[in-house]
Picture 1 (cartoon, rainbow, N blue to C red):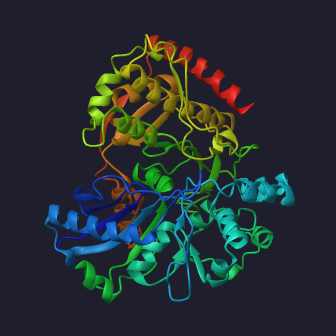
Picture 2 (tube, rainbow, N blue to C red; picture 1 turned 180 degrees about the vertical axis):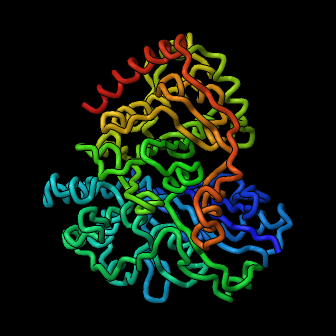
Picture 3 (tube, rainbow, N blue to C red; picture 1 turned 90 degrees about the vertical axis):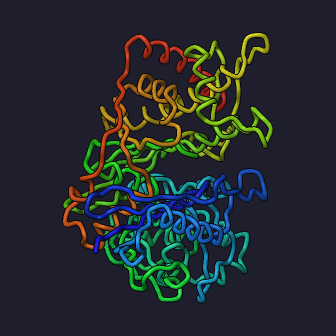
Length: 499
C-alpha cells in the first residue's frame, strides 16, 4: 500500500492540512479552514487571543477537505507532523481542559514583564544564557497569568505551545521539543536545559513544562476516540513538530549555516541558520534552536519578525471596498503596479500589529506619511504599503548582516505576498539578495518532517526529492537605486517615531 504523510500548519489566520505522497514527496491534497481568516480576541489594545478549541475545529475540517480532494484512503496515512504559530501560550489543567484563551504571538501585554526580568537577571546573563531578552515571549506571558490571573495559574498542570495542544488532542500526550522550549524563552543554551534561573525569576514550577522529546521522533500516537472522530486509523504516530518559522526553513531545505528562508504571511520573517550561539546585543532579532540541531552539529536559527506584514495588505483590501465587495489580491497587485517606485513620496510604516521586536518591543502603530490628496490614489496606497513591508524587513535584515549572517540567497514558498510581482521586485532590489521560490508550504514541510521522524526517510535529502524551484529573481542595478532612495526616506520616518 502507498504511504501518505499528513502535515498540519496551525496559523493565526487558518489551519491547513496537506497529504503528501511519501514516495514522490508531492502534495496530493490540501485544504485550509476557515475559508476566511480566523478572528482574534482583542479585549484590550495590544492584546491578541484565540480559543484553542477553534484550532481543533478547523484542523478537523481541513483534514476532511484534504482527504476529499485527494481521495487518499485514511488507512494509508503513515505519520503526522505539526507546524504551528510560535510563542503562543496554552494552559491546561490535570484533565487536559483549557483554562483560558491562548495568548498568541502578536499579543503585547507582557513586554514590561520581560523588561523587568532583564533588569533583575542582567543583560549579560539574558544574552549569554537565553541568547535573547525574555521579551514578550511565552514565558513572560505565563508570568502575566501568574500576576493577573492567579486563580487560573493555580489550576495549571501543564503549559504548551499551539502545536503541542494539537498533538495533545490527537494523542492524549503532553510533550514539546527543545526547539519549542527555546522559542518560549524557557531554554538555557549554556546548560542545554530549561532555564532554572528564568523559571525562578518568574515563579514558574519546572513541572509545568511539558515533557521534552526530539523534534524528529515518535512523540505519541493517535488515540482510538480521535481516530474514530477523524476517520483515521488509531496508532498513527505524531512524529514531528516545529514552530512555523523553523518549519518553513525545513520545508525549503534550509538546514546549514548561511542558508536563509523567508515568509510573508500575516507576519513577515527572515530566518538564517547558524552553527553558533549568536545573539543581537539589543535583542532586535531572536535566536532559537533549529529543527536539526545536533544532527550532526549545532544548528540555531536567527529570526527577524515583522508583525505587520500581510495583515496590512489584508486591512487595506478590506478598507478599499465594502465587506461584500472585496478586491482580490491579484487586483490589488495590479493596481499597485500603476504607481512608480517610491509611490511619489508616500511612505507607510507597517507596525500596526503589536509590539515589534525589531524596534526593541516598541509599539508605534502603523502610519502614513506624505499623503497628498491631490496626487495620491489607490495605486499609491497599495504600492506604499507593500514597499513599507519590504523596508521593514530590510531594517531587520541589516541587523542579521551586522551579526555576521551573510546572506546571498533567500528561499521562500510561492505563497502569500511573494505571489505579488511588485512585492518580489521590491524585496530583491531592497534586500540585495537573490530570491528563490519553491513549491512548498508549512503543512507540506510538516508532512515531510513526519516522514523523517517516523523513519520513512532515512535522511533529509530523501524528504526533499520532490522540492521544485518555481522561479528566481535577482536585483537590478537601476531599480535597486530607486528603492534605496525610497528606503532612506522610510528610514528617516522610523527613526523619528522610535527616538
